[in-house]
Length: 190
Image (cartoon, rainbow, N blue to C red; front, side, top):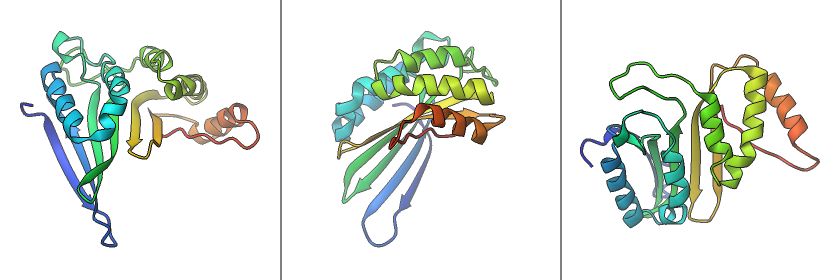
């Protein structure tokens, strides 16, 4: 894993509960580095093995045109550790592309990333797809990032992040109002 970590932050929860939160920004996300990271995660983070197929599928969304960056969409990891055991894994995936790693500016391709999520074979992401499409149509902006959180308890969270929305709160209220039946709730992150 040659020069893979861009930044690392560590926070200790208060109250003496021995719970730590790690946030890790990734760089140099070549396929070789990402495969080495996946091996490390498989060996040290129990929940990774349970969700590896989903993580790989989302990491494989195209970010760069260069062939050696096929898993570069994953750009951030988070861990929660309790009593020296990783109890949660958090992954974030970029949803904007760049021609190559030297490019300073990227471009949004909402149609491509929305299609990736809707056809991912990951039921929660597939269910979020129409809602995301509706929100983009109503409030503009772009899909910036997707996220997944996995806990050893089996709990999971799937997220989509927007950038530059215009009428976000009104649009979310309308989208959720149509989408939810009595007694239902949902989440979408901005």
